Image (cartoon, rainbow over all chains, first blue to last red; front, side, top):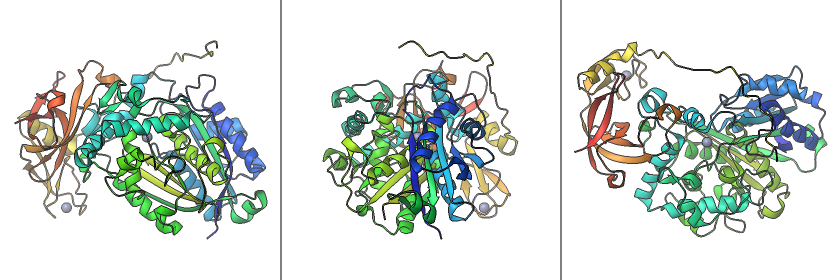
Length: 386
Length: 143
Ligand SMILES: [Zn+2]
Ligand SMILES: [Zn+2]
């Protein structure tokens, strides 16, 4: 089986981007990724676009994005795995190379979430569970989904609202160092704790914002990657899984089974243990999600997520630095772009190009954890310098 | 910085779905009569909630309707204060997941409890309601 490497990365500024439409936004990342890879764009045979869609005027974003960028007659499709659409796009592009369809492929993630008003956005995301049994009569929202997990986690393990706020403070600390982040301002624990309640116990600062953004990665087969770059970042293993849409069918509410399963498969295919990971991005759409991810990915024991953040183990210099780009919380969460954005960040970290927020890289191994919905989908991708 | 020029599109889109419920309409009919029922597979005995016309365990399609029981224990909950656009005229609500005595879990609003008085482990009962448009639905109430 051919090995596949990330050879080019691109990332737009995340935020409320009223200055660009969806194609222009995607182009910002595509242009950088193609130039960073040093490929001729006519050698890219397959472009997979990750986008949940529905928030912006274009219904068929893949062709719109390719047409604008002059990527003519490429194989293409839009993939959807909710907030994990970006990782799914990378996986699909990876598959096309592994299967021998071509030597170079690109994954583009893009979402434009601020063209509709905020409560319509809340509605669109809230409908993303089991519509008939959770939305029609009960008006579920995404904060509400994760709040159900937060209450169960607090009840079982003694995790506190303060612990969750600590995740937000860390996110904003690193977001302040990332020029691409939506929020580039530090916050205090008090500010996070006293922010408006959205769905108790989750508050405004426990939740990621609505974001416009894009990211892109160019992937290449081993032969081509070696020619293009001295610092390929290999896709060492991918694990993915899913779980029920309807939350009432989950066995418990203290972790995401889809993450546990995806991680198990990723570690197995990459032949690594969680303690070998130097740096990770975890899906922190809500602060509680980051704490559960520490546990579900095996960075600590089940129930010890809060301990990890209290001890500062997930900061630079800690045992396992997480979300040094500000995470979904501060960098922003343009749904389909998020997974690709995570790949960009971990690639930068492994290339030692992360500047002020560089983690120390000992084993050359990074991990991308991308959840769709409330653990409806989960993708774990292991990246490596070796 | 000046506001970026934006085209406010003139073409609006209202979506309203007609959702087929023919295969499990007995659930909603029973709810209207104040009963809380679900499907049980006649082939393998698997009990499903929400009700399903086809058995996810053995893929059989012979089912019978059984009473679910009303007693539940609160597993987890949240107090939703920012509600979606289509719930704009609703007051904030508590969404709870309760576990029935047969182990089946149900998600519904929890009514009749102050949000700060809800606790995992508290005893609940499933109750039936009718929306102002006339649709039946179910909620939890404290015992
Ligand atoms: Zn998400
Ligand atoms: Zn059956």
